[in-house]
Length: 328
Image (cartoon, rainbow, N blue to C red; front, top):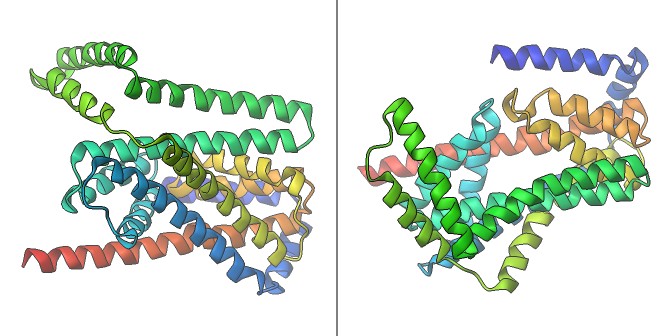
């Protein structure tokens, strides 16, 4: 928590570099918000969260079991997000573990749950790469386009490699051999895992590889993953309009991708302070005035970070209460 305070303070100092007039102007913009745009920003963020939940629900159907109600998946999406953005460094990993366990309690086969979470994450990364590449090309800057497309390729290559390993036996065999070497090295260093883990891991990978969806449904999952990012960006666009600023469409998606990339550093919970500084600077580079950029980022983060996180912890409290009741 101390680290979060330090980085947040550093971010405030970085924002102050825009100038005292920009900070004063942002306060004025916040005091005179066009409130009609705020509900639209909330709707866009809600659509973003719902699309992520729908993509996971679609993948969970691959196991052939009873489909989960969308409300259950959406509740776990909000609760998992609350965990992810509340913890520095390992928030995403802890949230994934929590969601995996909750799916198990709902009767989802562990292989199906693991496969759905992994593929959902890979599709989300691939969709973000498309947003990054599209924003870079749309910016009209050859340098930004080159860097953006290169970054997108770096994200897409490992994603494509893992998906190929799950689909093609020869590639999966090589992945199994690599994992076996990794397990043996771990056993020499930390005496874990115990003997037999290689066979269990190989059987799990074979079970996961047997899970398939029709290609059209994979397209649907990718479309939902893409909409997850686009709707979140539209929340930012609505926040800009709420402050009275025009939307710099040509550079908006690239600026948004830059801010979200900063969030992956994981130095603070949910990129607190880091995202605000990076996103405000990117919006200024896209042509937004400093005071409008600062105000819009604060409105956007109030909705996409604080409001969503608070909703997630409310859902978490409800899940804990329901779990205790069922145990009694």
